[in-house]
Length: 396
Image (tube, rainbow, N blue to C red):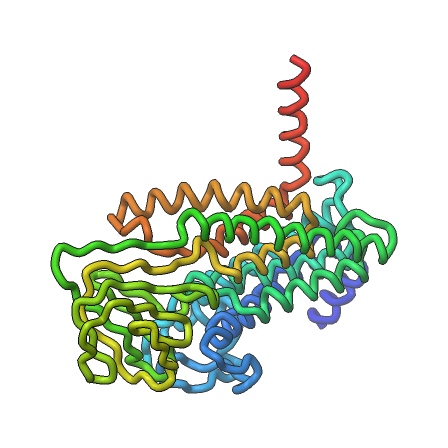
C-alpha cells in the first residue's frame, strides 16, 4: 500500500520537479554506467582485446568474470573496498575514478545544456545536444587514460570519433549553432580540418627543430636492438637511453645513425664498419641493406649516435581533428592554447620535482582533452572575455 501511494505521489509531481530532480539523477547514473564501460575500453583496446569478448568484465589478475550483481558502477568498488572478491588482489582506484568522473561530467552536461539554458545564453540546447556531448566526453575520457598508460590514442577513438562528430553535426546542427543539416556538416568538416591542419603544422615544425637526439660518448658505449617480448615492439638501448622502436621510428623517412666501434649482427662480428644506418624496416651496414625480418640480434658498441624522435605523435593530430568535428574551429584554437599552457606548466613541474630528463616523452592527449573540456563548458565565455580584452586594448 505504501509503495502504491508513493508511486501515485511521483505521478502527481509537476514536470518541473521531474526535470529538476529525477532527470539529473538519471543522467548521473547513466554516466556511471558508461564510465564502467569506458573502463573496459581503456583496458582492452590498447591490449588488442575485443570490447565485447568476453561480454562480462573480468578481474585483471585471476581472470574471473564478474557477475552482474557485482558490477554495479561506483557501488561495487566501495562495497568490496577496492579488492577482487575471488583473489583479494587490490583493484586500482582509477576504476572508481573513471566511473565517478564520467557520472559527474554527464550530470554537468545535462544541467548546462538542458536543465539550465539561461546559464550560457546563445549556447545550443536540447536533449539531442546533450546526447552528442555525452558521446564526445566519453571519447575524451577513454583517450585520456589510454594515452596516460600507453602513450597512444587508438584510431578507433580518433578517426571513429571524428566520423561520429561529423555524423552528429549533420543530425544535430545545433552543435555548431547552425539551423540546417548541410551547414552543420560544413562547420564540422571545417573544425576537423582546422584541428588536423593546425597540429600537423606543429608536428612537422617540431620535427624540423627538435627531431633528433644526439649522443657523444667519451669511450665505446654498448647498444642493443632487441625484442624481449615477441608480442611487443623491439627496444632500442644506447647507453642509458632506452626507447620503444615504434617511438623512435614514427615515419618511414626516419634514420638512426651511429659511429660504430664494434658490431655484432646475428652473433657474427662485422669488421671495418664505416657506415651504420638503422631504418624502420631494415639495417644498412657499409651501404648494404638487410631486411630486419632476418635480423635476430643486433648489438655492439658505438662512439656517437643520432636518434630520430617526434615532437608529437600523429594520434594527437587526429585527436584534435575529432575535437574540431564536435566543437568547431573556435574550440580548436582554445583547446590548443590551453593544452600548451597546462602541458608546459605540468611538464616543467614534473621534471623539476622528479629530476627526469627533459627529452623524455610525455602524453599530450590528456592536455588536449582537458582543453576541450574547458572549451565545451566555458568556450563562449573565454572568447567573449578575450575579444573584450582586445577591444579595450585597441580603443583605450
